[in-house]
Length: 243
Image (tube, rainbow, N blue to C red):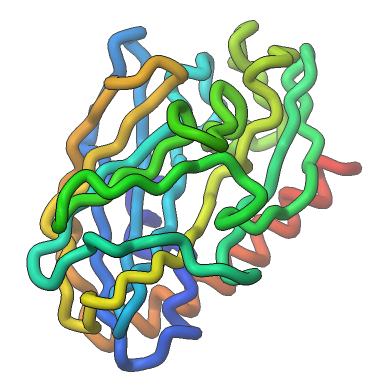
């Protein structure tokens, strides 16, 4: 799973040459205070006036909601984000999934994350943004945390009562969510200098991310191709979950 991180879907193939791609991952062996492993990735694509953020939970068959992604802090190294806001329109997306008491997922609708989903974008400073599902007007927490994939049979067989059949925590976001952020002072050369993941339904469970080396032109092409392959695999998984 970790070898796949730099091949995550981020829509790079649609962004063209005028974009820079930066990826951060949780360090190997990361755990949260409930002594459970976490594994996540975030990919940023900076382009003139926008930052595309793709946040993915890679921890398969999780045991506890404490392993779910619930917020993200990140900073820019040049330019500023003091007027940043979610871009309007159908450019952001996340698919909901509900998990019953037996750990069986049922896929729900695909939402526009800018308007339909309760992840709040906050400006921390001129160079730092915070995306959070737990707090702020319009937040969806403790629901709509990002959960990792089920086991190979399409079931969350490890899930305890904080996931399986838990009404306040359902529905979850199915593995990945993406947002486009309008930031007029950002350019294709804007860098992302840090990213910090948070997990669970209690604020403050943070894991600083580690930067993955930028892939360069051919790496960007590979990212785009990988997005297609992951999309195919996800559709197959969706068929299995609904079957």
